[in-house]
Amino acid sequence: MVQSKHILVVEDERDLAEMLQYNLRRSGYRVSWAPDGPQALAAVRAQNPDLIVLDVMLPFSPKVLIARLEALLRRSSEPVAATSAQLRVGPVAADLSSHRITVDDVEVKLTLTEFKLLVALLQSQQRVLNRNDLIARVMGAGIVVTARTIDVHIAAIRKKLGIHGGMIRTIRGVGYQLLSEVGESHISV
View 1 (spheres, rainbow, N blue to C red):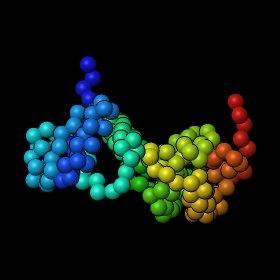
View 2 (cartoon, helix red, strand yellow):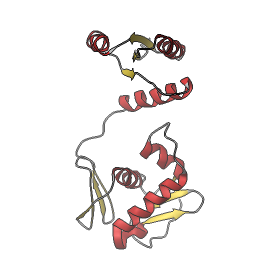
View 3 (cartoon, one colour):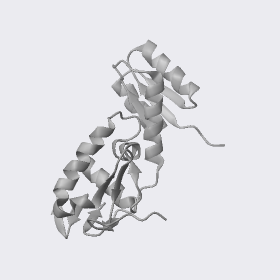
View 4 (cartoon, rainbow, N blue to C red):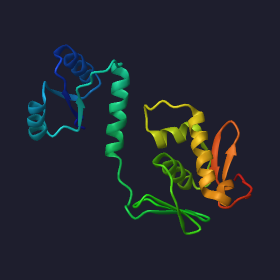
């Protein structure tokens, strides 16, 4: 039998804590509660929870909270890729262990979001990735951004890739594809 994940709720408002516990239990989680920091530390030491929900203090939907918790738990249980992973498509290379991108062996400085986008495209092995896939891979599940946000980041990446910026091909109405060289034509199999 698969044991359910254990979530520790740290919340000083009893009514809110009870509502959170109720909804989490209904979703199949084992739940414990601590009303303050010292009791939370003791609970962490004694129970070793899989996830901690810390004093929410926001307006929120229990369904949204549970969806975000599930995404966090899913990501935390995914196997970690080898730390020395290298990706290369044509002149563009990514070193995942050092978070470095090089173009023609010259380092290019990218923001974290730009780095994640380019890595997703490098990993796609020339498949077309739609904007929603890119948002999920880069921003994470439960994060709401417009598809145009991806377009802005792609434009910045193209600019930073210089003469190789054309390797990122726009598939109108769908998403993006990374080609192995500028001007390469895509051939579907």
